[in-house]
Amino acid sequence: MEPKSDSLELLMEALIKMVGKTNHKVDGLERRVIQLETYIKEEKERGAIPIYPQEPASSTPHIS
Image (cartoon, rainbow, N blue to C red; front, side):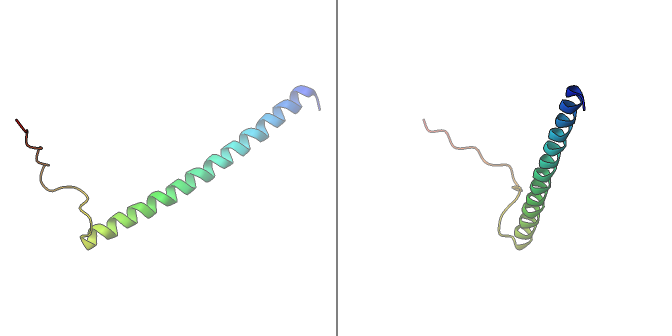
């Protein structure tokens, strides 16, 4: 092969590896998001944690 085509082939291989690693990381993050969503849903159903306050938060009283 010519040096130019060799370098293009190496570049393509490197890019393919990068894309593969990125896809793997995205898959891992997606799994974590699903786990967190499931956890929040279960905790909300149990009433263990308030997700969104029903009333607006009161402001802190001002001290004179």
